[in-house]
Length: 622
Image (cartoon, rainbow, N blue to C red; front, side, top):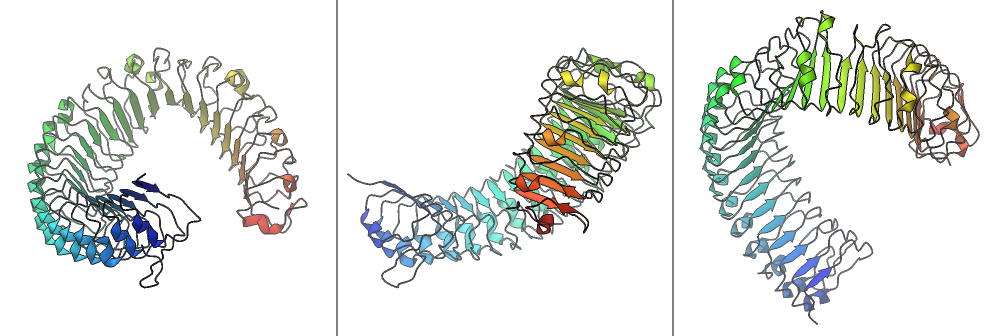
């Protein structure tokens, strides 16, 4: 019987690999991945942490994986060069600092993986690997590449992601005639060589996170095969005019740059499908020629300083996603194309909302603006039958124009709605799985929610409603998993009965609340957060939450006591901070906590079995 495959992966106890492995002359596949303790015997020199020299006898070996062998600091010198048939060599996550010269003799090698190894320098002999298709140097400590890199005539993928010491590329990079993908994400290169334009087969160029890169060379326009260009989080202020020559370009990602303008040459990108330019604080406008981007499907300008959009945007007949969230300089909206599937707009100074009557394809709609929004008719929303997500938070002066009947939206799953001074009774579809109601006032007419049988998440935010919870039918929402109350002015919730199946509950920044809802029925509750409730004095039923795994009580400065926790046998995380009046936690000595934090004062005590040292510890008491 001839052994062709030997897999010793994750053999944690394996400390030595004997030189007799060289007798396996028919071996084709050797996997030693994650043998972290492996210490190789080498009879000739007596050194450890090397492959035995006899590995040179494995002349039929095609695949060798040493991934995760962290004690592997060197490879055998001349021995490695005898593996003439080796196709794949995985040295990722090893302690290897440099490669032997003999690696250049591996004429059949196609894949060389050195990810997150300790490699500090790429040997010149690497240029002899004419068959190499992929070279992965992600996360290594290299500061440059040798000029011989240009000899890798078959190389298709070169990845240098998070090589934080890499400062420049050699001019010979332009000689990589077969290169399809070049990833320089997170390096510290300040400029690209002009020869980059010679990469005629390059399809993807990733420069994201190159924070010192301020400009792209004009030669970038010669990359006739380029499909994807990623320059997010760079210091680039403007895309070069030559970018208009990239006839095959389909996607540009330029989030978090310093773009100040987009030149008219941008409109020549006839095949562009996606343009992501969010978080560009200096970007104030788009060119009128944007209408020439006939193939554009996704336009993301979130967190930019765009103040107006060109009217020609309505001609983008294939546009499906338009993201204008947090564009707080945006005042006026033009007409949008009916092809839109997702439209998100938020601006504090928004003065008009778009005509929605023709947007029958919308599945996700978000409209949020301040009090400057002019009176308008939003009845068209009720006819958007494909809507699955709707967020409507407009500070309209004419409250009558707010829609209140959503029962016709049979596919609606998520509804976020500001109910500020809403006069008409709210009518909701049974399809909802998430409902968030904001600005529920004392006079807001809320419906009974008991018919929302699919509801999984319910939130009330910034509400002033002091009573009426008992008639909402929340306890009948048997599918409800999450319940949140944020920044509400109610001083008690006595009438609020919650469903027994509730899994997560949060009451946050409700500073008038003195007593939480009765918790005793919530036997399946796993996470409870009470935060920023300055007047909270009581949390009835807390001691009965037998299924509770996480309890966080923070900044509840009036809370003097909590119920005995000894019955909470499943509690593994307890975080109590900013509760100065709380002097004692009873029953904690009977819990098996994995995380416990309590910033107690000198007058505060933990019941027997838990000492003060645990106040800032990440470990549970013994």
